[in-house]
Amino acid sequence: MQDHIIKCYLEGLEVNLDDFIPSKYKELIYETIEKIGGEKLRPIKEALPEEVTI
Image (cartoon, rainbow, N blue to C red; front, side):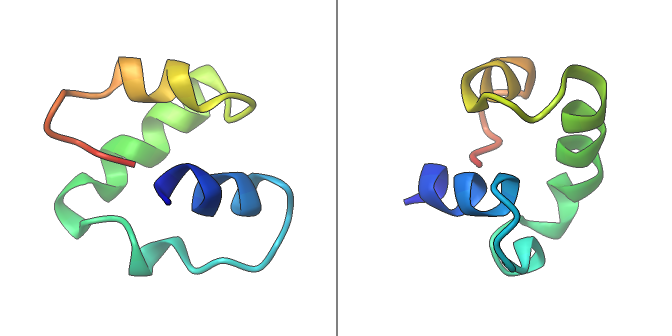
């Protein structure tokens, strides 16, 4: 389900990611997306610590 939510967001659909991202990881996730891009989910997941799920 998480992949579908992120894909919708990346495709420009209106998704409030704050509803799905734990606040303690929000900044780290956004920084990672800014750093490596948001075209594909796997590189984002691999760059984040294991306990972070997106």
